[in-house]
Length: 168
Image 1 (cartoon, one colour):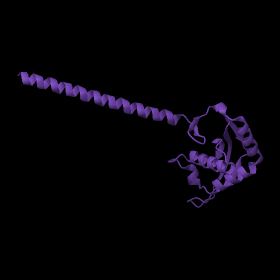
Image 2 (cartoon, helix red, strand yellow):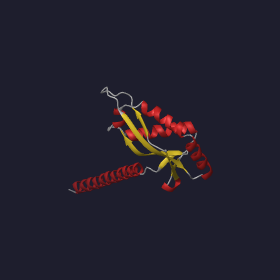
Image 3 (tube, helix red, strand yellow):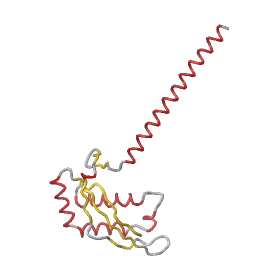
């Protein structure tokens, strides 16, 4: 009888330890998932030549195009011609005023180069590429434009593309 009581106490202690471990692991996992969701929801973090830098709205100067770009897309799977009209602004990291002001002037003086780069990107897209709901097609296009402009102007101060109008 004494052995049965002792065995029961050991089993209860093991169950309490097991339950505590399960609760601890669950709380840790939920906390890790919650932290990831917060990072995804905050879209003001960009990589600027090195570790990620958090920029506020006031630290980004928006340089708009003077007018929208309209062009035809590559022929779609449906065999039809589709067109796109897009207008956007280029987001520049302005934490270093001298460098950002120099880049802004360069962008404004070379709008024809920017427009040509955008034409090259968009003319290689199909309607399906633009309207893809399974992938974030706008994010893909914005990243492609940003990367192309960073290459052309040799600058990581270009941190975002803000689309103000798009129709296809």
